[in-house]
Image (cartoon, rainbow, N blue to C red; front, side, top):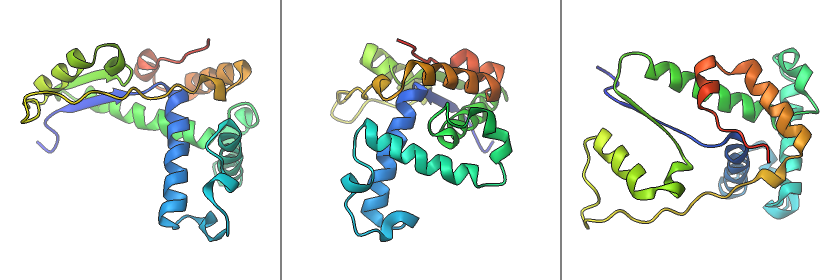
Length: 182
């Protein structure tokens, strides 16, 4: 078989989208291959590594999306959900992964945040599932928990994001998503 095992790791969507913003910044100003890279500016001048920079990034991404042939699909959520295209990609990725898990292939699902709750237990479960041994040094390196970015979103945006997820995610994906509202 082409795929023998599926390990599906899901991160909270709010944190995941902000992390994608940080990756975009690094790629944009590291490789200089993205359309904005011809700007004579630093990353912090264009998209600061902050909630404000994230908002600028979302405006940029949403403008691209609303000029695309798929704009009508997202019009209801435009202005309410920041980074519509990023949330849509997140949902589609996990819809596909959840679907792959239902194909009879041995699969393991867990949340990224599980590592910060119980690092050793989560790591051992993943290694066991993949039939792998711990590192040759006989220990598993420690985990640097991902940052939480709840404060990058307003309460209204979080509720709009939940509606967006409800609209586009499969039922099985919705069961697995952990979206914080606090």
